[in-house]
Amino acid sequence: MKPRASIDRRTFLETTAASGAMLAGAPGLAGLVRERARPAVDPPAFELEEATIADLQAGMKSGKYTSSHLVQQYVARIQAMDKQVNSVLELNPDAAEIAAQMDAERKAKGPRGPLHGIPILIKDNIATQDKMNTTAGSRALLGARPPRDSFVAARLRAAGAVILGKTNLSEWANFRSTHSTSGWSGRGGQCRNPYAMDRNPSGSSSGSGVAASASFCAAAIGSETDGSIVSPSSCCSLVGIKPTLGLVSRAGIIPIAHSQDTAGPMARTVADAAAVLTALTGVDPRDPATAASDGKGADYTTFLDPRGLQGARLGVPRKHLFGWSPKVDALMEQAIAVLKAQGAVIVDPADIPTLGQFDDSEFTVLLFEFKADLNAYLADLGPAAPAHSLQDLIAWNSAHAGDELPYFGQEIFERAQEKGPLTDAEYLEALYHDRRMSQTDGIDAVMKQYQLDALIAPTNAPPGLTDLVNGDSGGGGCSTPPAVSGYPHVTVPAGYTFGLPVGLSFFGLPWSEGKLIKYAFAYEQATRLRRPPRFLPTADLRPA
Image 1 (cartoon, rainbow, N blue to C red):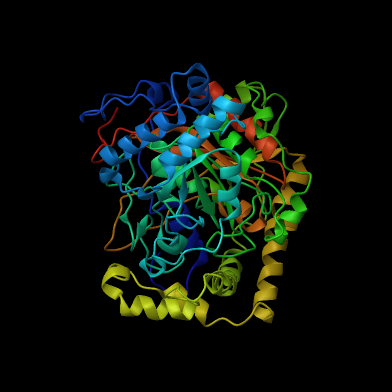
Image 2: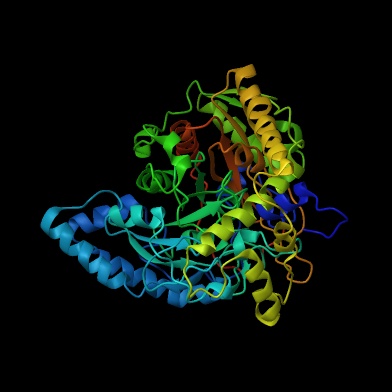
């Protein structure tokens, strides 16, 4: 984000969602499959590379694998490879013991479900009451133990998953500075994109994206306020699902804003993301927003239909969401051709009439809610925590500027601290404006006008160069409409430009996760475009 007289919310969102993407060229669809060899040596062979959750379960059922073996293999992979990309902050010292327990339970009773014994990494803003830290990437919260598991962690444990560790992220979910570099935290340093390590993985769920893409785990959990699941998923060639607000409880997740925050899965396949999402849902008294999800959750793996695009009416909102990169637009035209070939009805254009009209009001809402929600989270940590309010954190950062403020400051913290309570007219007016512009007059209106099942758009620009001197630069992206509305959003790999990933987004009305997963799965099965990363030092910019 660049300095300016007043903060440009569109610039803030683009830097968060696109991570300073610098736009490069894209080969044709055939070229994506037959891209020329890169001049670097491939990573060492790894028996679990690109293994799906179904693969791992089949291996454990046959006796080829145990959960203990999977944990050992992923830990060895992290120890050997993560030094290059800096995606994992901390390994769970109890992971081996938990895996052994899951193996014993499987032998005695059978598996609990698809995630039984499966190693999962989670973002370091998702609380766990165990030996691991929960810090949002800040040194200020080292040693401040949460009083209980987050709902997400508890649901993973109940499903039999092994929480393998915590991933790096953009510190405080990229809501600290107007000049931030995505993927950097005071605790973990700079996370790097495994497709080209001088490129940015995007934020704020950068470590979750890199770790899942690099086969450091079976799948990972990220969180999003605006773009922070879908953008790193796109930049790391993953499937990411940002659920409808309230489908997954936020209790125990270090917040930005309760009107937009949610957690969700990041995985290498649609099937894996669907299996993880199924485990995360449920009504939670600690998060009132989940009351609306009662009866709306599902086994999302039942939507995995390779013929699921037949008859689907998909709208193309070209205004504002296309046109910022000819190379990305070319990939989108290829994607649209695939969707048509698979039986979808494409309505083009189907523009969202209010785009660009709620960027400033969104930022206002986030500033107010960040102060209120973060103060509530910190107050729950107890007297041993070094900070109990946003004001305490501002002071702590200033006192530890060498560690926490070496590249960029805390201007957003300071602006949020100036805001009043959530009863202020400025906040209430901005929140009402957001909901009307993003929902009623926005996505709802275009979906109704054209009788659409979903909207499609490029998720964001290809990964840009990481720049700790100047911070993130602008780029395009489609995360804002579903983020502000609280509606679901799924991204799936759509190809590569000079080896750098690009994602295709499906988003639509609330509680339509099943539809979006069905469309994304059918597209994925028709294209199978994902390739594993090769940990190249830089992108190969030679013409194909």
